Figure (cartoon, rainbow, N blue to C red):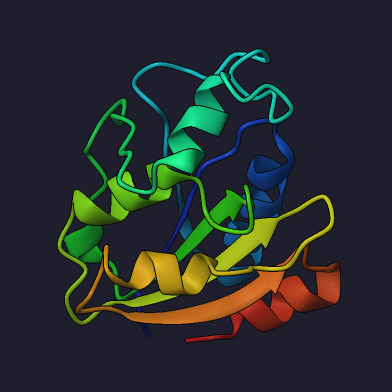
Length: 154
């Protein structure tokens, strides 16, 4: 049996709730991807072009610093990576996370929360951050049934 980890970034709590349900269904460990500087409500105001999230998302090379780099990625075969969809891609902190570890030979299954869009170009934009991993598109806003199906993707 492979060892599994659910790693997630959550700005408002929606992705965190989903990650906890997935970790329970998959029998996986849980790891929160946290920014070194937490996001405030003003930082997340996507309608303000000068907000932190808008500035980061307009620069695809942006790599927000992580609060820690102590996830034991080497101990896992499958890593579920969850995030809210921002501007039709993953927040660039997900790139920061993927580029901070060696995912060679690992299976990465993506899941996301979104107010109305699908993954968009999230998968394509993340492949270069973990080039030696197998990245699989999971679900956006998965239902309870979908969470069980995601948990079985190993």
